[in-house]
Every structure is written in C-alpha cells, then in structure tokens.
Image 1: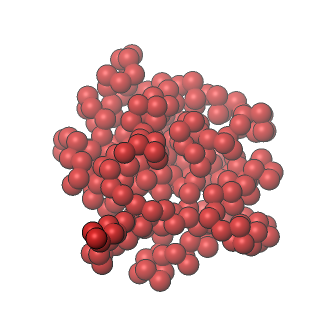
Image 2: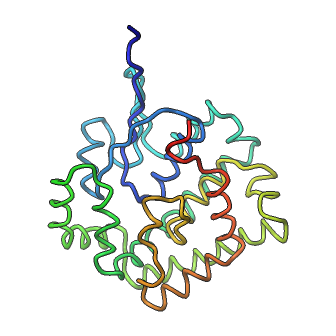
Length: 258
C-alpha cells in the first residue's frame, strides 16, 4: 500500500491579505496544502510552536523546513510554476505592493469592518475550524479589537492616511493599465504574474471580489456607513478595481480545481 502523501500546512488568519496572497500562489502552482486557520493574535498558537511568529507561515512536508512569509511562499510557488516570474521586474513589483500598499489596505479594511458592528467580529470568527475556539474568540473580541487597533494604528487618523495611499496606488495602477482591454496588460508586463497576485490580494480587502471567500461575504455596501460605501464603489468602479475583479475571475483557481 502506497504511503500517504504528506501535505504542506499553511497557517493563516483567513481574511488576511498576505495569507490570501500565499493561498493564491499555492493554488496556482497546484501545491497540495491544508490550511490551519486562526484569529489575529491567537495565530501565535499555530506559528510559535513551529518556529515562527507571523502569518502566512508554510510548513513544508517531510521536515524540509518552513517559509515564514508570503514573499518566500510565492517564490517557492514560482519554482513549481515559473510563469509566476516571467521577467526580472516581477519580484520588485510584488514586494513594492507588499510593503507600500498591503499595510495600508489592511489598516483601512480593519477600520471599515470595525465600523460595521458585528460584521467586524464575524469576519474573524466565522472561518475558524473549532466551534469552541469561535466562541472563545467572540467572547474576547472587545479586547482583541482594542489590541488590533493599538498594534496596527487603526485610528480614524491612521485610516485616513492609509486611504490617501490607497487612492494613490489605485491611480498608479489605472495609469499602468491605461485604456487597454482587461486581460491584455498586467502590472509587470503582458502576462499575469506574481506582481498581479500581490496587488490583487491586497486590493481584495477593499472591494471583496466574489471569489475571495473570506472577505466577499462581509463587504456588503448596504452595511457600510455612507463614507465607506462611497469609497467602496469608487474603488470597485476604477480601472484598478475592475482589474482586481478580472484577475479573480480569470486567474484565481477555485479550491475544488484539480
């Protein structure tokens, strides 16, 4: 009888934009993995015993090591799927969006979700794999929210600074894409690459493409305060926002794909 094939283990906070980036890359590269889902801060229980701290955190099978962030995970995926890195500028653009756009998308998204009452709690607790853990996280949510606001500077002033950066990055992507039809121009050339995975993963927190299963169910504009609602539609209707939705529709493998 053949030995059971060991899978990679991806430790995540399900709605995290950086975890989404890792998840997208692994699925594109057809790398088998199981996902170990945690709430923010509670994720240390999944990373520290394995030798890590932040998420995403990928444990390689057969004791071959760990990959501690989305950058290393996507590079690992590129070895299995070289088309993720079709030219020399892709990695630099991927890291640019990770460092200059991703933190602002995360801060603003937390601010928006926390403004939506119980939805801010549900996006964290609903995906958890243990009902007991879901109850524990829900019970401790007021403290968890306070700690996240402090750790990520999720204040009205911080969120406004992040919104200004988001607008700048969306405008820059609008300029890169120009008037070309969607699917004929990408962020690092003429083909889909890791740079697009990075920008779109971070952008998914802001517009919730329907394929983003851990974000989309919670970003209903009807539940948003008017200011957030107007900005949601602004981003969604922009060329960059349409690009994010296009890439999810055409380049994001479903969990059920072989």
